[in-house]
Length: 119
Image 1 (cartoon, helix red, strand yellow):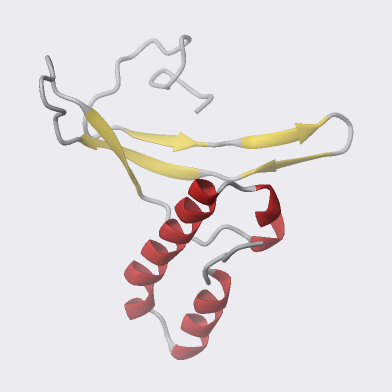
Image 2 (tube, rainbow, N blue to C red):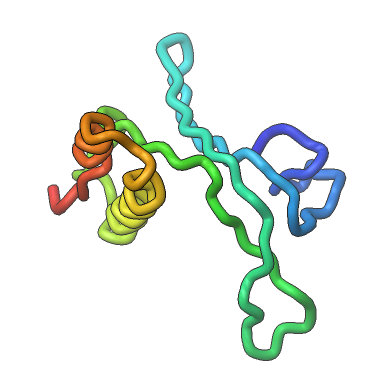
């Protein structure tokens, strides 16, 4: 998240509050060649409080629901935890969007969001 004033950074000037929407923009840039960035919008929400918490804890809910382009993913480089995160995200995208789509678009989504599996 590179734009302020609210951001997850030492440069942030505004504390995160529930109800704020932020962008999550991880990316990789090769100087003089290309850049890849995946952007999602996140809503700051209440998180379950850990036992012994001294103050309320926040979490993020992903608002952007679009499959991550598989051409950007080399699953051989991912850990099992990272593959599981992508598969879980894609399953959530399918669960929410599939009922809203016509058959052709649902078929596209099913292919785009299929599990990565093991490399």
